[in-house]
Image (cartoon, rainbow, N blue to C red):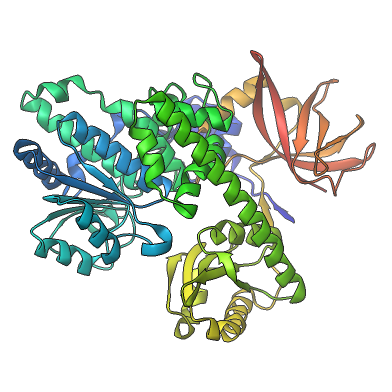
Length: 565
């Protein structure tokens, strides 16, 4: 692993530090993250709901609000169709919950992944219309490119609102489309909102309009109560935690720790979380989200929506246990697929990019396997399972390799592909697999210039031991919450000598004590690094994250080892 650390001009650090009234280290970190003006730094460090932009600035949001008000006045049937990931589930639950408060009985629906695929498909719509006859159809977290599907709904006399954040090819005709990536400027502060953030803005606009018209229900509702769902969808969907996303995520995490949703309380319980304790982005990414996602991957994503909308405690606890069981099943399936896929890697060493396939692998969970393999191998990996007559799955990449561009050179072999530079979906006929493997490997080799990629560790700062204090960590906490485009800081200490015994636990991990000068030390943990234990009594450099360990009311600093040399 290559450690990289870039210095910052000391004069710039001093200028920003004095202008904002912050420490030099915090100013240094912010400059590295692109914040150079005092105004931008103050807005970032204090993300207040009061600084959110007027929802009416989002193109077509006002038209959507007026259409919802018509639905209220005419007591129309409304169907809310959401995708099966956390963003789609929270968007659907938020919108359905609000519409119910205004006397409607909206019908929530999600696609069945294995039968109907992703997004707004004709097969999912056909099933929806057999069960329910809406006058208004709202698609959340999908639908931007669904020209044929929207036209089909319009022919049935159904009005359509699409709320989405995925890239669109063109403006979608014959419906109200709320999607900043289609209609708004790339520099607009709300452009990177995920769908649940856009839904919250829609609800905010709805409340404003109805309050101005004297609506008693709107007067009694607090739009901030739904920020718990917004935080979950925003962090789970890995959108940049800058601008309005950061404001909503920070406020939503506070709301989530004391949520009054019985369904979330039940989910907390099976996750080993407690109401009243701080909820971290880690809790959403690795505890709450996997359980919600597991339902959509293995069964029916309507289950978590039912749980989030219910006020029946026993029902919610039963659904939470079901989600937990699905997650355990998902983990076992992923473990098995990972082991089999890794055997395929070992049988073909030295490739620059891997395409791994088994017809028996569950196509709904291979994305996580691709992510793990890509991380462990430091290679782009595409993992495919069987779905009907096609090989279908997901790809994950590494820094420096644009997966979309690599796949573009292989497009003649693929049935479908698309996504983002670091993550894509892929499907093809199995007969094309070997040719695809060769073409994909060649495409990645070309990007890498025939060189084996090395993992890069970007250090935030190289510290002196005396800097590591509780006041320093409190200072750095102002950067929270961490996520995309605002990563957890990675610090380094040079020429540290470990003297205390190292404690191996769980076979793969170890605990240690990190000396920080003047006879002080803090506890550290190294996950999955027991095969590479640092020597005692010899100077080493260590790279680590700093955090708080809260146990029985006591709050102490701890570190997580990232690497040593």
